[in-house]
Amino acid sequence: MISPLTHERALRALPTARRLIAPLTRARLLRALEELHATGTLTPALEASLRASNLAALRAAPTAGRPYGRVPLEHGARGEVMLATWQPGVRCAPHDHGGTQGRVLVLAGRFEERRFALDGPALGVPSEVRRWQAGESIEVARDVVHDMESADAVGLTLHLYPGDAGPARLYDAEARCTYLARGGAWLPPDDVVQREPWTRP
Image 1 (cartoon, rainbow, N blue to C red):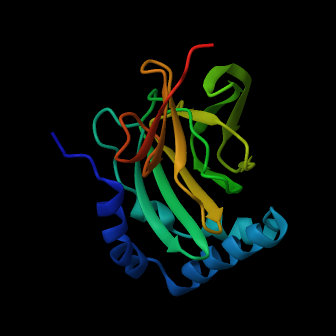
Image 2 (image 1 turned 90 degrees about the vertical axis):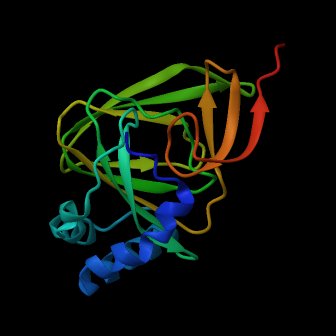
């Protein structure tokens, strides 16, 4: 069995991924982070140019049991860009994005996204279900808690989060706790910063 790619190992692989990206594509990714930071959205022209970039060549297959394989393309003061290759039928953990807003571009496949309300510190039931397909983009606001699942064998998404995000919150309904963690949105988390149990009322 392949060992899980931890957040630290993923970041060590970042320089290699950057070398594989065409300079024009990297410039577009950085411009997209700046545009998202300044306006909260992407112009149609910039989004179309990102979709036209050959990012699929960089995809990494998910490790068994993980919802997706993640390839960080940018990580620094400007923000984070990550390419996710999804395993069909495996839902990621409900999570937020560490206090940053962002955008997810669906490059290939169809996805179901569930958004959750919180019940105090605990995860509530899904409050909204959305379906997305290639060519669409998902706005992720600062306060959104969501999960996703690919409906297709080929699911590919590009995630852009501008600015300096803190650790994400991953909600574990079975263990009745929230993890502050870095890395992918799966349980158990790769890099736990803190574990917060859900206290009973």
